[in-house]
Structures are given as structure tokens and as C-alpha cells.
Image (cartoon, rainbow, N blue to C red; front, side, top):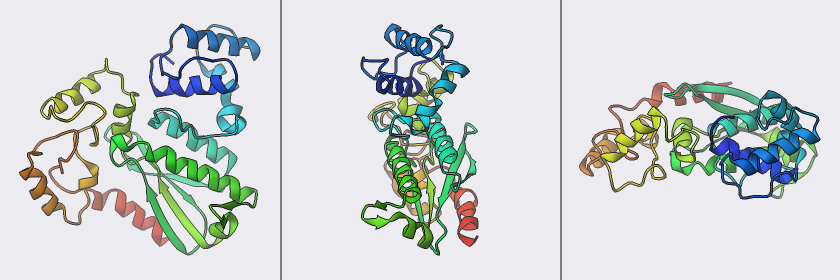
Length: 273
């Protein structure tokens, strides 16, 4: 771990619940966090170097996988890396989950989709199509974790039998449609990087939109929520009339609609099988 950001927030959260870290969850790997890491490493018989490498993450794994009473953190900026950690934890604990990718983002990040249930009724949930609405990702992931737990333990979820829901319904969850944009807003993309600088140059053309917290688009400045084929030409007319005629933190519809041949063609495959 060599930079500040959401992963440090996640580390601090884990160490806080384990009793090693007692400061603010701020995502800064400073002296207090380093001392907490050293104390953890010492307690678990690791080399106390203050570096969070493979051995330290392995020692944290039982707690990442639910040993602290939760899997999905809801108190921190929720980036793509944390999503991937949570998906791996849920798959380890609940192997009946079916996890695959609908494709890749601009930066090459897989866009995951998770299938749970085997019923004829089919439901699709998605989150974080807008980057600054990333809070919807931990919301969906927390729901999935709760659903899995109640299913395995034959409990109710929101007043309904989880096992009956599982038998009667198939749910498809796409927890983060826009991982690159989410990483920009949550701070996983370093402000010192060229990628951050490039997006800032886009944002400079729209000074009334706060940066980066006003960023909704993908990393190229295309608003994915305006990429659906239905009504795209009308959306283009409206947004162009509002001045969004080039890549922007939000509301630029792009040069054409591309979802028909990308995400939704993949979803149609799922719903047919």
C-alpha cells in the first residue's frame, strides 16, 4: 500500500474494529496508521515493518471475510478495489453466487455482475452509473451480503423468507457500472496522476461543476446514464442545447449510444439462460 485513499480508509476501519487504530478514518497513511499496522503485525507474529504487504493482508483476511461481523464497509469512500475485495469475500463464503463480467471499462476494469437465486421471476439491480452516486454500490453490496446470510441461515430478509425468495426469484446485480469514475470521485485515482490531471482539464471547461465531487461521467467525460439507446437523439438535442457539447463531468451524451451492443446485449444473454 503506497498511497492514501479508500484502501487506507478500509485498512483503518479494520484496525479500528480490531482495537489497533483509534484515530479518525481519514484515508491518510500517516504515523498513527503506521503504528497501528506495526502493533497488528506484532500481535500476529509478523515482521513489524509497518508495510501492508501480502502477509499483512493475509492476516487480515479472516476479518475481511466477515470476522468482524460485517463484510461491506458502509462508513468509507467505496472504490472499485474495495468492491473487488468484497466480491471475493462473498464468493468465498457463498459459493452459490455466480459472478462474471459484462465487459471492461475504459481503464480496463471488469464490470462485474452477480447472479443469486434460481426462480423464474427475474430482477435486475444496478448501481453507480453516475460516479458521484457511488453510495449506491455499498448499498447493493450490503443487501447482497444480508441476503446471502439470511438464505444460508434460513432467516427472513425484510419480512420475507430468504429461501423462498431464492427459489422463486433470480436477481442480477451490477454493483458498479462506472468503476473508473467512481475511483476518481472517491480518491482512488491519485491527484498527482496524469489521469487525474486529464479529467481536471475536462472539468475546467465547465467551471460551475465542482471537481471531482460533481463528476458523474465515465473517465472520458461521457455520461453513461445518457447512453441508453431509447430516446438518445432527444437527449442529445436537450443536452447540446444546454451547452454540454463536449466531454464533461456530466450530461455529455457522447457521439453515439453504445449500450445496445455492450452491457445490455450481455444482460439479454443472462435473461435467456
